[in-house]
Image 1: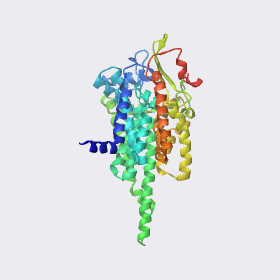
Image 2: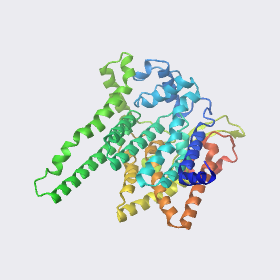
Image 3: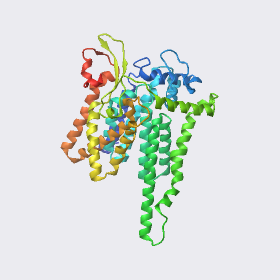
Image 4: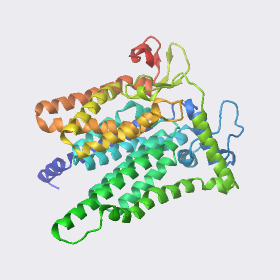
Length: 445
């Protein structure tokens, strides 16, 4: 390759090259010092402990409750897929903190690639995809939850992938994209019951898409030929089998398959049913409180983050604080509000999807029977906030050189804020005297 062709190659593929290096950074951030802290913290006493027992082949994690050592408890109130993935990490890398957290870091790292692909397809812009991937990489809440043995990052990534294949189906009409949408919806539900929102939301949108497609076909035929054409509802009934297969049969099959170990451990269908009854009773009847709980309306404003870890105390101490990047979150509120104005004014269909996704995965918590909620319940909505920001930054980039300057300044501020908070995101010891600089609001303490 001569110098001229090399320059042409770089110019034509500059977005892909930047994405490649951004992906390395994303993975590097998630895996660097992943074994720190080198002990259980926060909900790892449930999720990591249960994954360890699953990796050992124990029967107890597949029942209700179970006697655990002091300070630990079996996690049985969520479907087992996330814990099974963590158990796989333990089987591969050993029973240690790196093994527990490996797949969370892997999913969180590659999430930058998935959101790039979704933005690229949704907005037909590689640049928008790159901006979304950049924001995803330096979003501190995603960073923290990609480095702890919990299952929320799995739910977020499965939701992203289901959304990606849905958009591909809408654009290209290939049936296998719809099947893949249903598959990742099944993975979402099998990670947490709140994943049913992904299934219901994308299933409903798929139904609307099918109805719209058939309406166009009917209208075209009526214009071309003066004969009786089947009604739109008659045609819509014909597409129900593919929707049933994609959004009922496949997710149900996935859900049952991830429970196969329960039956291998000689549990019965009656045990399976009773387990699910108790899971529902637990979530709907939970009366406990927690000092870092928060309500649904507080999440978008980043009012009450979660203190996850406090290391050995002294003049210096290590902390892990599950807090969103405040620059991204607070400006994201403005972009979200502006997006509502834009869709009312322009009816931009590509912007409808991320807006609806934010609210679909968020607002149901206002009426959820579960009252003990935390900021991490907002995680499935967060990538769609990033997509909305990327949409507008991409528009600004093409408008003028001042728009480009604004975009560069915005991304520098997002990166700078991540770096500023990094010590309390990654358990880097800081002096007690300087700790207060991270608590911008009283409610953050």
